[in-house]
Image 1 (cartoon, rainbow, N blue to C red):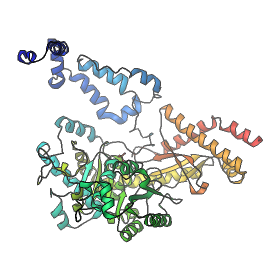
Image 2 (cartoon, rainbow, N blue to C red):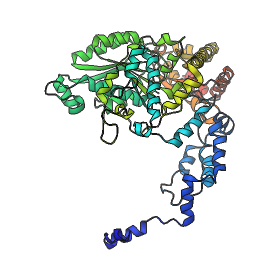
Image 3 (cartoon, rainbow, N blue to C red):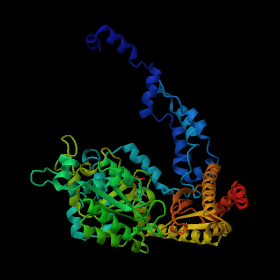
Image 4 (spheres, rainbow, N blue to C red):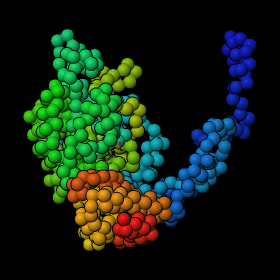
Amino acid sequence: MQNFLDSLNKEQADDFTRHTSSLDDQEWQTLLNQFITHANEEELLGLEANIADNSVDYCRHELNQPPQDLDELEKKFSSVTIPELPVDIGTHVQHLSKDIFRQVIPVSSPTFVGHMTSALPRHLPTLGKVLMALNQNVVKLETSHVLTVLERQVLGMMHKLVYNCDDTFYKQWLHSGEHALATFCSGGTVANLTAMWACRNQLMPANGDFAGLSREGLARGLNHYGYNGLAILVSELGHYSLKKTIDVLGLGQDALISVEADKDGRICIDALLMQLQHLRQRNIKPMAIVGIAGTTETGSIDPLNTLADIAEQEQCHFHVDAAWGGSSLLSARHQYLFKGIERADTVAIDAHKQMYVPMGAGMVLFRQPTLTEAIAQHANYIVRKGSKDLGRHTLEGSRSAMSLMLYSNFHLLGRQGFAHLIDASIEKARQFANLIRQQDDFELISEPQLCLLTYRYAPALVRQLLRKGSASVQQKLHDALNALNQSIQTMQWSTGKCFVSRTCLKPVQWDRQPTVVLRVVLANPLTTQEILENMLEEQRQLAQQSLFWEALQNLMHD
Ligand SMILES: *Cc1c(COP(=O)(O)O)cnc(C)c1O
């Protein structure tokens, strides 16, 4: 130390001495204890027992208060000074319990049906804790060993679920390090990006004096191959992660061609063909056609077989974004809805949406594992050439072994258990749709194709006026209904008792006018019809208390 200080000039040395951390013995011990001690186990065990091991009850009983005002919270979390000294675990746990864990959203409550992630099976929080404690990094074999092998097996199961190739195929590819059947990632966003990344690179391989797009970049690639640009085509209900994708890939957001959807939320084939023709006229190469198997907003499934035919004719990549819906393939009864997915070059599926796995679990599957050559990377200290490291084909680097969660769910629930859960969810959505249809004052906007549907509060009388009134009355009514549904959703959320989400659709039955709708996703097995009935009743009451009726009266007087 003295030698080191001697090497600095006086000013530097003073500065260094002043800023060297100086914990006293007790503080140092407190710090070490954070890593090794069992002395404060009680507080930690309390957290585990009350929250981690009991999250459904915790959500139900401890989190049934209206959420605190955001301004208040922001004030509480406004200091930007990193705490100076270590504190003991008991103090910190108390702070977490009181100030944070009581202000979270009870997403696994059966009355919270507005989001896409569902309740978790009981074994997963424990498994998560073990995984976190072991802290394996599946970027490479050296830091994960069995978990690398297990991840490949899980990905193989998913590949088989979608593509159903024969045994020889899986024998050849499952544990091959040179290629990957699929890769695991943080979610659908990265899965879509990975698929399109591989697709883009493969589109412009090395050729003559051109070393390939991945080496020379997009501008030279376009120049060499003589295109004015590249495009990705997807229905207007495409997930916004595709916008990020196309931006990151350097194609520009205008290259994401949004194709009209029909009354059921499925891509219009005629409109797609027209867009393809426009691109041809402008010498823009369609890089990929994306089919959505379960749109985020309406749960609709595109006609995948037809899209596969068109992609084949155009000789372009066919990607299916099944981030939310893909898990329904586990149901033999509903598999038919996905006909054609097996022809997709790549498929994105999230395990954290309907596979009852916690967040951070997405996958991209490659029909032909050789496609991963287009994105393979290596480095000398990690993911070496010839190694079986998973990191050679993933966009992300360090990664935890989330595949273990899916592995355990496959074992603990079984394919048939999953199928049962999925069938029950879809059945529940159909029943709820029927319930809505029976109400005079609610309107079903999108039928459930899977377990997701949208509806709104719109009394039959108002709907009649909306059809018959003058254009200006129609517009005002339309705006009033939008405002009403927006306020129903916000008010219901702020009571803290239940949650539906909201989006804005352009329903064909309302001349594609932007229409605010309530959206529910019914994947939580603990959600009952009774809960849904009460939820509607509460929405009705909120609607009746609102200013909508005054607005309506004024409108009628005008
Ligand atoms: C949720 C979703 C995504 C994005 O997935 P993340 O896991 O949130 O990154 C992409 N596509 C669809 C259709 C989705 O529903």
